[in-house]
Every structure is written in C-alpha cells, then in structure tokens.
Image (cartoon, rainbow, N blue to C red; front, side):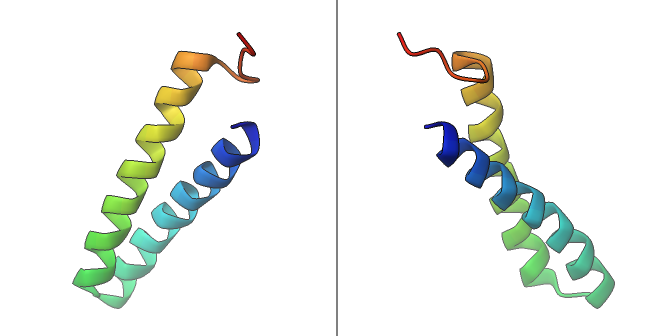
Length: 59
C-alpha cells in the first residue's frame, strides 16, 4: 500500500499541473477530467494518510 499511495499522489500532482495547462490552452474537457482526477486521487491519498499514517501501520 505504501508504494501505491506514492504513485496515486504523483497522479494527483500531475493532474493539478494539467489543470493549469488546460486553462492556458483553454481546453475545457482537459480541465474537467484533470479536476476529477486530482479530486479522486488526492482524496484517496489524504484519507489513507489520515487513517493509516505515513509510513502505514502494519496492524
């Protein structure tokens, strides 16, 4: 779960970067999908850290 959380955090960060790129290019569909991706993956990472801590508890 530790490595998966890091990968999901990177996906959320790249989605936030892509939001700004979509705004710059005025691409509405890219903005919508990037917002959804950042929200979903970011929420998963935040709740995992709050629930299990980082590094995660084993039991």
